[in-house]
Length: 471
Ligand code: GLC
Image (tube, rainbow, N blue to C red; front, side, top):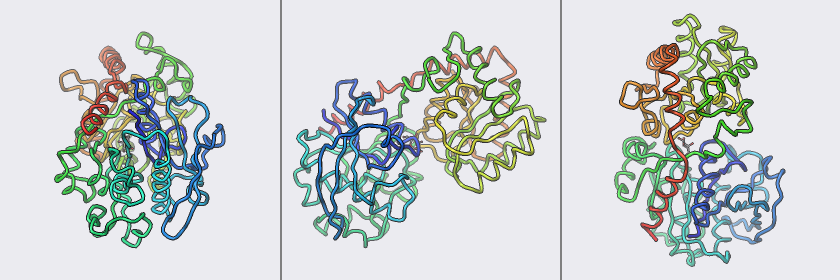
């Protein structure tokens, strides 16, 4: 099967969140299982672009409204990623340093989708399946089925995977002139709430819709930022498939980004050395349990609750724990988190920014990972932390519900709480400290965590099943 993934992000070319990790891994494992999967994404000006060699694969032109533009498809020369990576270069529109955050993002992603389909029309290797990720590729199923320009792609099946239904990419009807011609009576397929809504259009037009965990699939009918009714109507073609993680990259026995390697047999010693290293660097006390948070400092991740909860926990336990917060996001949250550094020297620190290596080092060093997310479609960090023997503490939602079992339940290995508020977080921290003081129990749980398998192989089978159900 020839599968083309279309996405705004793909690790290591461009990453803003978990979407990049998934799109950077799934095709590799699909190829290993005998499919032929590749990725198409915009050509941003990222360090990965500059560092690698590319070959020109195709040159074409198309229209975005009344703007006639040329585009070039370039392909990564090496096969180090385990899949072919194609970038769409549109001068002036996509070739910028950031992935998102420009005033003309709608135009940029429509231009990207138009150029992609224009190229696919000319591609010798006709795909069996086009797999779109999130709203930035959400107009593709509609355009393939209904735009005159792409009639020859009409019979190719499409799958949409939703990594986050909070974002729809909605825009006013004035933007409809950017979409290549289609029969106006099909307007309803693009529309939701009087706007053009690319995510809704993809849910309506794709042959199958998946999201990244079974529990999040159930939640979409209740909370999806306005699309609840649509998910209710389209339920029959929707399915939740839990993400995998790249067990080759996330492996404490070989990870080149961590200072000391370890496996289940020597985990106590291995984690101890990594913890000493990170505690020295961030002026923390190695004897105390180390809690980390890694992620975007935004409301969705409940990062705004952290400053109050941590302060409360440190006061209540007389600084009986260490906290290290890694991430960036809302400036008010960043400053509230930074403010605590002076109040709790030796027990608390932050790393404001995004750095893949610091993240890996923290997973290897920490005792507990805190994820109080208000919304978490799947969540990858809790799965990375399991691999590194770091006990996850999560709010009971979405993919967190599907991947973490509370120590109070049968076969439990993590800590789960109901609300993203100070009380629940502080109470969970107290439970964690108790656990930390019971070394034997803690050791058993760490071993249990490291034995859990979230590798991609079984996930690839689940996607294969979805593809085969429509081809
Ligand atoms: C988004 C979601 C996250 C998920 C990731 C990969 O970032 O917020 O929960 O794990 O996509 O699917």
